[in-house]
View 1: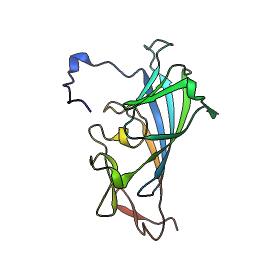
View 2 (view 1 turned 30 degrees about the horizontal axis):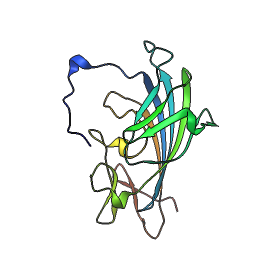
View 3 (view 1 turned 180 degrees about the vertical axis):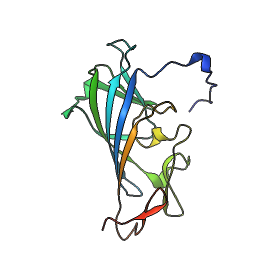
Length: 168
């Protein structure tokens, strides 16, 4: 990982694609949490139609990827240590992905990690990229719907915004 580089307001460019709604489903497991993401996306009006979709992502194992419910062939996208790139996307679309992460091995204290057996998240300033592929920047203002699934024996209490939630 390279040293942090300064970001100046004078260099700001709006993202080429906007996320208008995000749905996340976490199926918790210390060694292999599955995160399903559904991102409703649209191209920025000023972005060129040939602009690729580039999403941040670190330490993510990609399981499945589709656009508008059509699975993408491996040749249609590239994944590297910094994220996901898809060269051809429609103007407006639903991007669905399933990834696997290992919270018990995440010692960076960013994204989803475990501390004393408890699941924790830290998404600011750039921790969301350790949860799923996403345009991980502060000006992405999407609505969210989040579902957390846990084993009743391992995770007897699930918290949402600090409030206990029981799905059993």
